[in-house]
Image 1: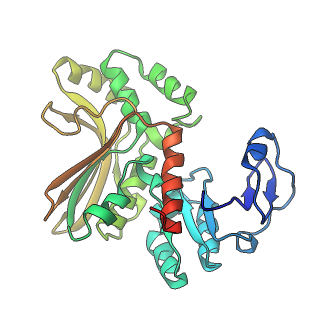
Image 2: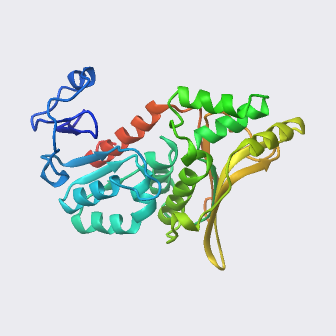
Image 3: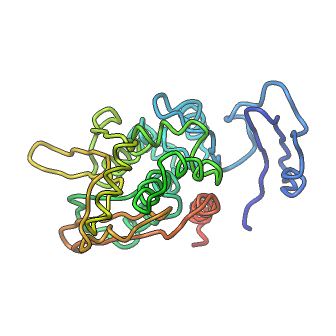
Amino acid sequence: MPFVVAAIVTARHGWWVDPGGIDLADALARDRLPSSGPAPAVRDLACDVLVELTTLDARSAQPALDHVRDALRAHKHVVTANKGPIARAYRELRDLARASERELRFEATVADCLPVFNVRRAALPLAEIRAMRGIVSSTTNHILTAAARGVSFAAALAEAQRLGIAEADPSNDLEGHDAAAKATILANVLMDADISVEDVRREPVDERAARDAAAAARDGARVRPLVTVRRDAGGVSASTGPRRLDPLDPLYAVDGWSMALELDTDLAGTVVVQLHDPHVEQVAYAVLTDLLEITGLT
């Protein structure tokens, strides 16, 4: 790889700084890193890129937001898989990156390594995106797919938690906070909107939605957890919640852990990208590709 890891800082397992490069196999084999106590500030780390991977706080975006701000102000590139800062402060962080002449990359924030922002940059640079629909939550898509097969809501959720796809507290997914943050990112980054997470209309994926999924399956239809973003005369609006789809819908067959995004454009028509059956490794892959883009090797 064209880079070395010069520092690892965690909330509960200590920290390790070595400008010459940390042995990652050694780091992964440890229960705790060599140093404890107050960690060094982001601005003081001897590195060119901050990779921010803290747990999502959908409401405040902290501590990730401060980490990203501090890195950009210290003229460091930033790669993050944490959707909080991008959902809560995209314009501010974009402007900080531009002022510092540094890159801010966040491909993993919406749907693991589903190509979203890379597709925009590489394939749709001249096209206006007028609307988007997508399945961007593996957890809720898995639950509704399982419900269509007769699996109980509780059993489907427990399976997602066992595999590490869903959090121990799944409320961010089930109540739509996670999807609302993703809808906000899509609207503000791809459609140059200026909406907040609170502007997104949320409907939960709950026992009732699971019963609806089972009933729809008996009719040959499907219920999917859709994020919808569209522009009209009143501006850009966004919503998230379970929606019934017929067999001709391009998102109908996106089941289980899979995710997809449909982009309605003026010049390129309707473009659909899909990621089949992703797991945690695909988040890591998206982070890696962002790092490689910053090094200029992609």
